[in-house]
Length: 446
Image (cartoon, rainbow, N blue to C red):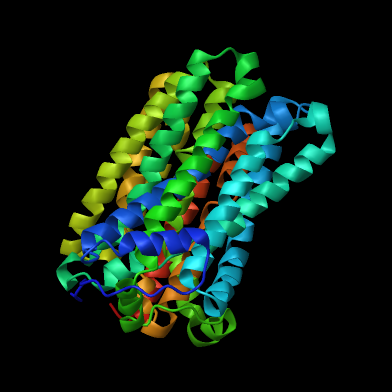
């Protein structure tokens, strides 16, 4: 593993936040691998908290606030359409941010991305509803959502790749899963906050002002995350390690021409995990809200327990992957998700008990699969293309597997039955297994 001893930092001109982070880093003797791991988890947890705050609000708030002119089901479907805009914009954010990094610096890119994310999130918090602004409120909501997507695409810092590449061969699965822990942590924080607000406030107060509070919290968390990550990325040692591993941005056209097939394989290899992601987080909350007698606060509490299981599954995936291989772990998880899909209609239609069982099993499977979804096949990229390739692979996986999952699952199940949830999950599992088979046939690098 490369040495993590600290070198004297330089102070190029950049943002005030970056200069402050450089000053803070001067007090440290070295940047340890454990510190990088903390940076990974903090960064991802802050992004996912922001992500889930919006997702939960899309079910509990936005149908009534921005789409009161249609029934609750149609309003939720409209809200899910706007929800997907961030995933559509995310690859664009990655492309733009890579250009910013090549022109200025990694710290500047990260500062711009997180500032845009925080601004878009705070903008949503202050946004009046349809009754005040009319259609303009929907347009502004869509623009802020696109801003969140561009920002998330630009927030890639290379920390997960650096951790994985500096890991001993027998510990690659463990290091690959660390960044994924941000997802359940962010979800538990967001769900816990909404559960408290829903249980504590009247419906009128919650829709008037209570729902805005989590967006303000998301803004504050993003500020903390900015300094935590800048503290690492602006150090000489971090830059040296990235240079050693050739983890630098390249042009997207060059990437597509040289290793476009790895981009496609990487996006589809994680499809089962990303499809399941929203089918145990955002979609079931919408289904329960529309068609169940369960209390929203109670169901969010069950989801919090499920997220804890997912965190345990992510940790277990690192241990398993280091013994049977990352791709084998991802493939085995896809088989289990395919099997689970057959029980989805019965469980979701089985009342509160069945819905809770669906949640808990689904979250456990999500942890096992999602833990290795990011690192299983990005090692296919040669060193020169890995930094940009890893970022775009994640963007495309989110777009293909998760962007429209709540919209499709709710729309099809509401109009044609819950069997379509099974079909959706099964198709994701089949795509993962097909991509892994193709990956194996092409003889990828490890």
